[in-house]
Length: 537
Image (cartoon, rainbow, N blue to C red; front, side, top):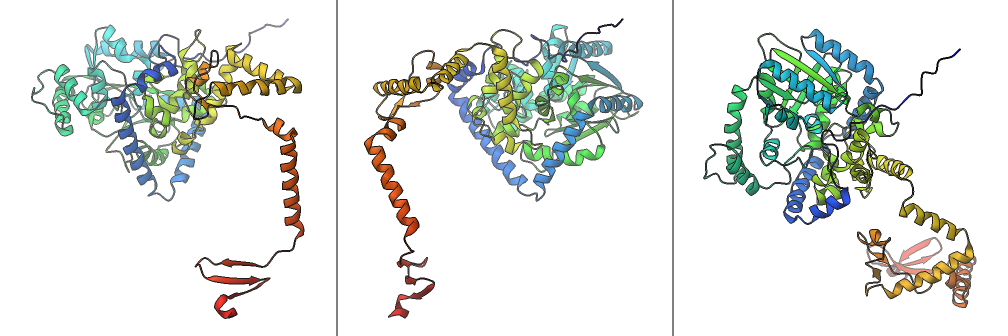
C-alpha cells in the first residue's frame, strides 16, 4: 500500500491586495498621463542626467571596475544558491549577540510583527530610516491604522510623506518634486516653520532638520531597513548620505529592522566589494557619507533591544524561477533607472509599484505575480521597456534585465490565452504558408498608400491595429513589392547587368591607376612600383 503525499506546489507570491507591489492601472495608461506632466519630465531629465554624468566619472576612475562588477555578481549568485543555510547562520549570530529574529512570510505578517513590537514598548510613535521593504509592505499605513504615528527621517521620504505622495525613485523618492514644490509642502505641513522660508536647498534642509531633531531626541522606537546583512557575524549595514540613519540606529531604546531575505551576504569581507559598487552606481560618489554597521545589542551603546524581521513576501517564489531569480541580486542602487529612456520620460508612479524602472519591471512581477486577477496591471510591466540594454550595461551586479523582460513577456503570452495579437500572428502564419494567398495579401497591402501622409507613413490604423499606431508610425507599403519587381522585365534586366559587371571585375587584370595619397600629393602607381610625379618627371 502506498500513500500519495500530493504534488509539490510553487512557493506563494506576495498576497494580492497587500502592500504596494501593484498599481491600479496598466503601465501604458498611467504612463500616458505622466507624459503630459511637463514639470515632471524637466525634473527627471535634469536629475537623471546629472547622476549619469557623475556615475560615469567615478566609475571611470577605477581600473578594476569590471572586475568589481563580476565579483559582486558572483557573491550575490552564491548567496542565493545557499540562501537557506545563510539565513539560518544569520539568525544564529544575531541571537548570539542579543538580538531577536522574526520570520515573516508576507506583508501582513511583517506588519503585525512590527506593530506588536512597537505596542510592547508603550510608544505610539516611531522614527524610520529609509527602507524600501517597509514601503513595499505598506508598514506606514498599517501602523497608522493601529494608532502608531511613523515619522520618515530621510529628507526625500519626509517630503513624500508630508505631501501624502508616493516615492518615484528607488534612491531619490522625491525626484519628481522641485524646490518650489518642496517649499510649499513644508509651509503647509511642518508645524512652526518660518513663513518666510525660501526655496534655497540649504534653508529647506535646515527647516527639515529642526523638525526632525525633536523626533530623534524624543522617540523611543526606530524602524530601519538594511542594505546588507552578514551571515558570518550577524552584522547589519545601512548606507545613507544625511546622517538620519545614524541617529535612528543609535538614539532610540528599541530598534526594529525589516529586511528582505535576499540582502544576506556570506562574509564580512564581501562588504569591501559592495561598498565600492553601491555609492558609485547610485549617487556617483566614491563612498557613502554615512555607513552604519551594528551587530545585535551592545550594553551601554545604542539601542537596548534589537529585532530583525526577515521578510519573504514573494522572494522564495522568485528564487524558484530559474531565470527570474537573478532579479534578487539587485542592491537597490537605481543605476538602471537613471539610464532608462522610458523611466526618464514617465517617472516612477507609472509603474504602480514601490520598485519602478527596469528593475521594478522584472522584480515586481516576480514578487507579486502578473495574473492574480483579470487584466492584472503587473502584466503590462515587462513591456515598459525598449530593450535597449542600457540597464544591463549600468547594473553594478550585471543583472541581465533585458533577457528577463523577454522571458516575462513570454510567460505572459503563454498564460494569457487567445488575444488579438495571437490571432493576428496565427493568421499571418497561415497566409505565409500559402504562396497564392501571400501574393494576394501583398497586392492588397498596396491600398495602404491611400491613407499614408506626405511623409510616407501611416499615423493611424483602424481597430484592432490602432493599438500599434497609437504609439508608432507605420511606413507606407512600397509602390512595387520585391517579388513583383523580381519577376518583371526591369528586374531581370537589372540582375543581368549586375551579374555582367561583377564578372568583368573578377576577370579583368588590375588596371593602372592614378591616385592621390593621404597628403594630397600626386602619385603614379604601376604594379608594385610607386613614385612621386616629380620623380617621374
